[in-house]
Image (cartoon, rainbow, N blue to C red; front, side):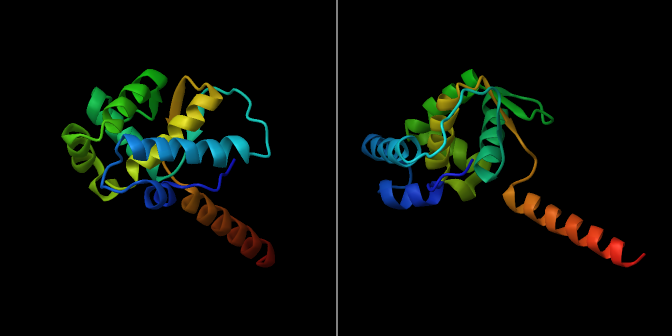
Length: 158
């Protein structure tokens, strides 16, 4: 399922500082309600677990590994761990900034809006855990194209 909001667009339209404050978080939540809840054409059915791909979900996994001492091979974040992580990051204080900077500094601006999207979707699906894929949409697209091209080349070579 794909929605028309992303972490960068939320950051640009809703956040005035580096990390969102309470007013910014409210603007993000209002935007998510409008863009996901009200504009969604498909009914959202409860599912568990939620499988996530992309940079934000991989960053969430890295943060959870650091925050909860999860093993390096772990690919899952429980709902409880995710809620606790959200609580820390939504405060927007020095602890939140330090955690982001030590884990994935490039995402300092977009991580909290991205986590807000994941939080909103996890809540709708009532997922008890997030399973994070190793790769993202781009990698999947490239693999599909490469496999398609290899299959095509193989067929013409016979």
